[in-house]
Length: 574
View 1 (cartoon, rainbow, N blue to C red):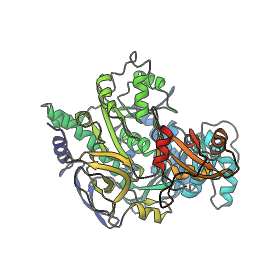
View 2 (view 1 turned 90 degrees about the horizontal axis):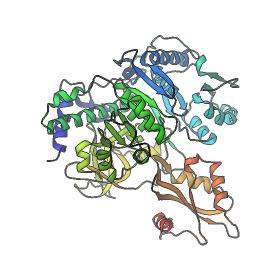
View 3 (view 1 turned 30 degrees about the horizontal axis):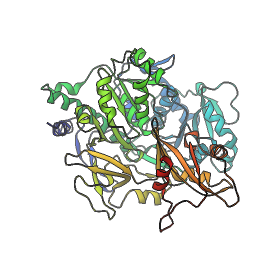
View 4 (view 1 turned 180 degrees about the vertical axis):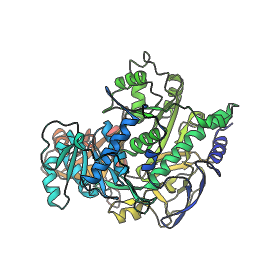
């Protein structure tokens, strides 16, 4: 028997009348949507209304520990410092650019408490890329770690000359910081709760901006409203609880008892970057809402992850598939106590179907889960887990409760179940706009409000979504979306490059690595290592091509002059 109908029934119970997750109709940007009627109008209320006890552990990083009570105090001190000392106004952009430190989490909630917009800058960007993000978003105040501060310092004068009066709040740095910069420890504006009326910070006000690598040469700022972020959280909570209830009901138990879960908050190992929607919206936010503990990793190390799982009694882990494979393959896996794990999830990249059974059979008490999402839907679009996932391991699951999905052909016609086409999504979790890019917004969201994902999918007769290809020109390397056009634009600056094309090369561990085919200018020679060095001066390290293919003839093209990337990819792996 398929679990999907039982799961759908449980969702109906959870979202019915007079429940915390009641779904009704609402108007968003002039369109009628299914909405969570009791969703708070401000993201900051999720923080303020948390029922976690002051002495409960909230943040763990290496040998540092911070309780919920300590975190609440520090968040208010930073929020009031932003308002009183840095003049931050509701709706103003405040940037975060740092690795997975506790200060990232505190900064995010402080920005929400101040009614500002948290701009989640990619911490792997170099100085030029960070400069673009700062100026594009208008992040006048940047909360950065020492490394990001050093990367931005050479560009700060130019940013200010361009009209943005840049200030820094710097974490984990010693000594003099130079012009317009203060230490994180010196920011303390008091612990009053800032008063933000709904007309200043309501459902449709901006809350977050994240940057996504798309098919243009420059990353796009994806704007999330307060409603977008809250809706994603409610989607995740209802889907998680609904699946738990369905599993219990299918086993003959009481689903109502399963809905309550455990009084103890979850303990989440956070290895994915917090600047991704996976890290911030789908990991940090729901664990915070569930009064849980976040165990932070600055950078990925499977051996350290196993140590932390055992030491901190981690219950939940979500990472890109590469991380899960690294854990299972690590020589210390068998000798490590992983019995506290109840969920081992993957997101950010397609999960190999064979991993589902491997996780289920290898990790003692953990169920495998998979989510499909995009920055443009504020986090999660579908989810699969438990018995449903084992039944259809090639699927990324069923749609979110307030979401509508369809698959269309090249003419925009909706296709029946089982047919392949572009996946489109409609709902209050769909992003508001690309910041300062109205043409790109109009291209992504059609006049009826449907977001065109660029992913090629099949929706079967039970509603399971299968992502089978992608139409967007992206490389997904270990969960990082890399826009091919951005890399091409950097490489094309090389004086010996006549034409180039970037594409994904299969990689056993990362899923894909960046590959580039180049045709030199007549009479010029190209050294692959020199080209990689050139690219590394202009791009973050993860975007630098690992494979350089130098062609002696022009790159293959179709009748319209478009480079045949599929052919280049096939030649690269042959």
